Image (cartoon, rainbow, N blue to C red):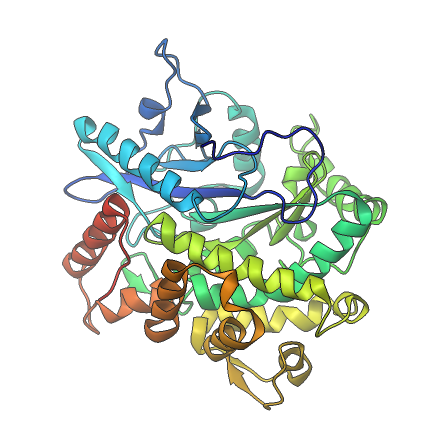
Length: 417
């Protein structure tokens, strides 16, 4: 059975799902980064390519040469079997890396790599794009070379569906780090953010603020308005730094939700990659279920959803980036969206409430429910990483934990400290 849709027409809401997972390539013994993704990304003729497609799944390069992406090679029919397929390919790549003394490492940030030395950019096709980014933003920092994420692409057809999908996803977005933070450590030290990747991503384009905005996208609900108010402004502001117009494309937009008009989908980029694909897919199923419920309008109208300004949602996102599931949400209007009248609730409690009360049990498989309950009980991966470490940890402690994480990816199992 094919993983992908045989697409004969534009897809409507939730008729297809695109998933992308990014992983680091590291030395099997030292776990130091190894910039060798181009040794895996070769076609049958032995030529280096930026993408390989294999039975509905694609492998592709990223900006840094030590990162490789595994993704659906187009829209999948449903999410239920995507995790299984992506897991097979993670195992295959891990096996291909063995002769080089390398393996795949999950997690959104490498715990000790120095992003200011030893990082190599992809030198093959698309290199002019990466070199332009490097020239303008200096891609040697954490925010560019140490940010492994999970992307979800959801289709829409026309402005009416874009309006509904964009409005709903904007409200879900601030909660995602509470479920998915996996980057509490970098530079061999505990960072003051459970989701260090998102903090770095949030600030990596500060030289040209219009590229990321406030991560939570503006309340814009038509293609024409988005082009005028977001994309055209962004292109104008980068133009003095990009005279050859290499970067003046819609993918320059780095908001947490990126409308991709070239493929009629919204790409979500706020989620840290997890320890293995089935964990990512469980969280993605939760995101999709909440989004569907909001779009149904049975509890909260579209007009109310559209009324939220990005500056109202931004503080909630900042809090979950820093504190994960322990972030305290005190915006009563936000809590009321999900049927709560409390004056304050932790982000983790809200996510669990949504799972148990806001969706129906039919939204999830038994395995997904089990994984989500693990996250509600033990916290996101970042919290579980911290629980596995002594309070005054050393590099050898990190090596032990992250070696276990590599095994979780290889064998497709949750990380439990």
